[in-house]
Image (cartoon, rainbow, N blue to C red; front, side, top):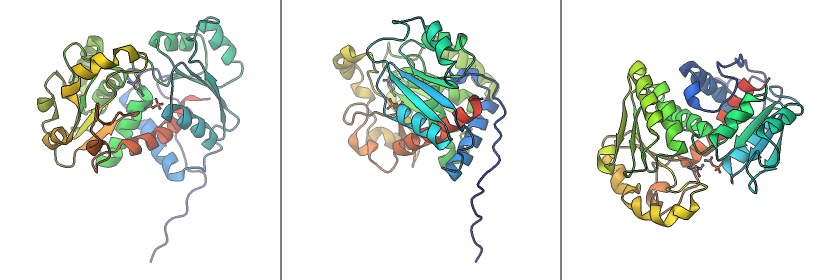
Length: 322
Ligand code: CP
Ligand code: NVA
């Protein structure tokens, strides 16, 4: 019987620069950039803790204006796995730029650290940080997009399916940051994307128009609709997110009424392909955007996605930080 090959202690990673200096939005990445992130993530995931040479002695600043479990833990652990460290700044009491200008924050940080992860309300703040610093800025969620999430989502799908090309991902719910990032990423990777929201809660028209343009090049389909039954029909995966995002807490009651028909339940999953996957970025609210049966059922891959946040973000860090 042949022995499994021993783990290579220093597997070759292609860490040549991506076409982008920052990760603000996956729309700025090329398809090749995304595939390179996935390739490095696969190698890192296989070797897990044997890569402490990759970012040895590098430091990451993490500034969060909102709560986080997954993003905060995975970036911190990811830096440690790669031989570096992370410093966390809780900014929930004040928006970035309130004590001193965003420019000065950027100019100070670049003297001490090698990269920044920021979770902000305004996407513009991330752009401003990136504009004023020579170190990479990574979007850990803004009101506009959640690129690290979408990369982990599609990495997980590629693990499950082998290839995401030609498959159909249906997103049901609010046309929010998670949704925008999924749209941007799907069309780059050749995945058809359907977004189904109540009227008035559709994704940003500019995101959709830009995605439709890219979709023509990649031969994919972008469909925006309001009918959950039609959206679920024959889908390869169904994705949902909270109905009220962080910062929209005062709209929760109103939104719970408006979104009620958009809950992902077993009936909706039954309209999708047999064995279709259920996805959620988390945190999830069982009984609201998803039923407990679906969330905890056999088609749910929510914890696989959460696990992959670690591996995919390690790849992003390894590819961006110099
Ligand atoms: N999905 C996600 O970004 O989770 P956190 O808000 O816990 O970081
Ligand atoms: N749309 C959610 C995602 C959380 C990870 C929010 O912005 O709160």
